[in-house]
Image (tube, rainbow, N blue to C red; front, side, top):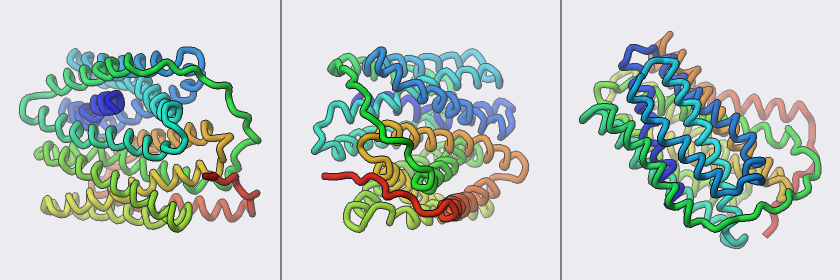
Length: 377
């Protein structure tokens, strides 16, 4: 938990700060959005190789290298905030983040007894989300109060603290890969994968562009993002409760509806320069839905995959999430440059409403699938 909080805390401090610095340095909104896009592209590319790295080096080395790639390179932002250096550093940091996300999730599954795996992953999620709730507003507040320099230094040092926690982890021998009984059918993966990808795209645009839209009130933007992170925890727990009590998949549509409504409220707030209360309501609504989409889509994919393909299912879900966040920050940055910030949130709301529905239509067109593997116990 200490490792996760420190690693993700350093990431959260700089997540909204770097795009804002690029914007204030004269870069376009599209360039500011591309910072997160490049970061996430490097994350996804690295995630594909992490299972092999885990087998070769083990969890501790992969986690430690990930922390060192995510943190210390942030000091290079002190030398230049021009486009090419910033994008290059973001790519390096993204590769470290890719190592952390995959290895960190695998670590919990390795360490926790089977009967408490859900609570263990929940505890790790609380540590990560709590770090984000502190880091997101802290980075922007530090930048507004002083400058970006201390934010860059803090973002570089915090992940190094995670290395100290990593040294206390036990050595884990990677077990041989479990046999996989064919590929997971596309028809059972498409809808939850599109749901998490499009919701993450909305989050990517929100986290990258909201501080720019509220550049005169950057600290308020940090508070709004922190409120959204807090609501995400509630959404994940609520979706898990519904899934356990009523059935897998039942919470996905209501969760997407909350995400869409949150984006609509952000649209009104950006168009009318509304009060802080509306921004808080938008953040609560979006965060609650976003947490629900994350949890429900992950459970749906795991259920479809079955125990023999958990690794592939986890990798696929993470790639969908991170690719969606990167694509969202880039494409919505272009929308901001062309049409303004109110259209950013309107386009995101429309995508959340339409894209998963298209997935459902495609699934029905593909015809009935074989019954997926079911989780037991």
